[in-house]
Image 1 (cartoon, rainbow, N blue to C red):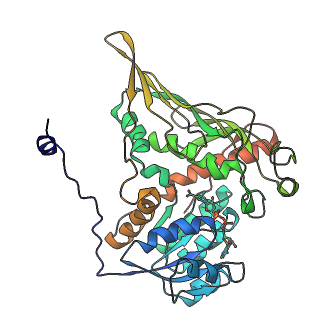
Image 2: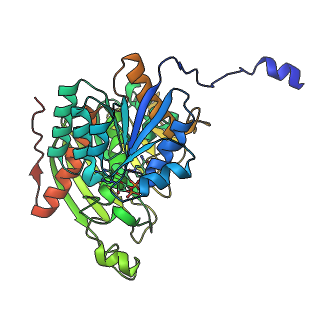
Length: 383
Ligand SMILES: NC(=O)c1ccc[n+]([C@@H]2O[C@H](COP(=O)([O-])OP(=O)(O)OC[C@H]3O[C@@H](n4cnc5c(N)ncnc54)[C@H](O)[C@@H]3O)[C@@H](O)[C@H]2O)c1
């Protein structure tokens, strides 16, 4: 068949974003470390964004950051407070380490600024609730930085569940990890990260399955954490090993509302390639979602749906959707969806009301591990 004939059947899609530039948003960046680079890369592509301010606790870091990106006239401040006190902003990206997420988010919301907060939402459940109280009082948009959710393959998991083909879901196994992959810098100390693999990559596994099944409330948890690899000068750089005081492995058994149990494990380092695929078991079918090699919160290969067809045990392979990340990729979509919600009076693309339960499971795992027994997951009221 000639190209001319074939092209009649090829839908021409122009997916270049149409952005209304009649209203420019004044944006500030709090924390100008590693992830702030991806925020900046995306903002620079958006004609309706003016980056007006930035802040970092490390003297000179914010100034060097904006210079590196070739953006001029950005006012730099020594912390989020000075920046938010001095500037009139429409939105901020909070790209600080986990331990300062809550104070930065609460301060920004109290100033009436819309917030895109990097994941994990916070370190503790109490902090997450305090952020939500500030969000509620402010009436502003707070979205949490879970960009894997915007991937079409990830969205497929929810679509499959929503068809009802799995029946009543009663058991979920999720998690992932790496044989070796311990980060360094601010990720490995409680004073900056608060939590280790749990907050870095565990929150993604939880979001993958909880979002798919509608974020049921977590009730109880038996959690375990350890850090044999992170603290070892054999498996970690000796200087980093000496200051390492967060988890590098966690496992948990969580009971969720609706008589669902969640079996979870996450790892930055271990003596095996993966702690297993994600599986969702239901009364009518089951779904297997392969893990990625280096767990980053996405689908690792074609998913398999196990179900009976006319009495025959059948496996249906769900092919990977190509170009699943949309125009500009997931980081661009994460920021664009947040800005569009501000401009169009929409709601948060990744709402705190869901991520609160993600955080409560993580915090519950930490608290149960400390006590060495099962605990009830306590979630204070937001009102
Ligand atoms: N969404 C993703 O894919 C993704 C990827 C990596 C990291 N993250 C998250 O992003 C966050 C930051 O990670 P990172 O690797 O950029 O860390 P980083 O340590 O490189 O940068 C954090 C910066 O925040 C600054 N900071 C801390 N508190 C501050 C405050 N009150 N005011 C101003 N500046 C402050 C620090 O000085 C530091 O420069 C973490 O919560 C992490 O989990 C998300």
